[in-house]
Length: 202
Image (cartoon, rainbow, N blue to C red; front, side, top):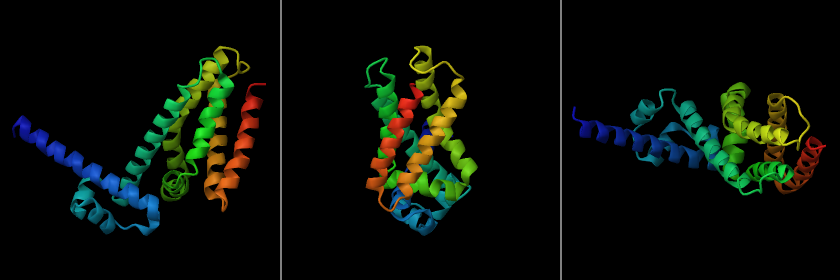
């Protein structure tokens, strides 16, 4: 097979995969994982069921993982872009901007449904947590390490602090996502997170 033929085949495969992820992402966000069947996904993507299983041997669960990872990656990109706008050395503002942005994201229907509600129920807590840590832990650790290095946070082991803070922020986002009144829950949790950040800097 020629190089151009292989490239064309690879391009088609990548396009099929992207179409499936895009269709599933929209459907999962609108209707939830449990209410979306594979036939509905392939119809929305304009591909066959065989193409789905060729791309995702594990079927709908593996496709959901790909969707979750895409949403997580985009979310971390957004958070990273936001915190880079904070003046260097303003640790309190840096932590607050990141935490507030995560809470704001928890009110978005797509993040609520895919990341916070369906994620742990579809994949189980351990696998869901592993994916979340892979995307969020590095960012939180880097921010805290810089804060400790300049004396903004008392000297202490950064890794356990990063895990504790990320766990608290995840729980805060889950609280908002599961609330019957997310607007009020977001405001109340914002005040809690503000006090938490102030406590870190004490």
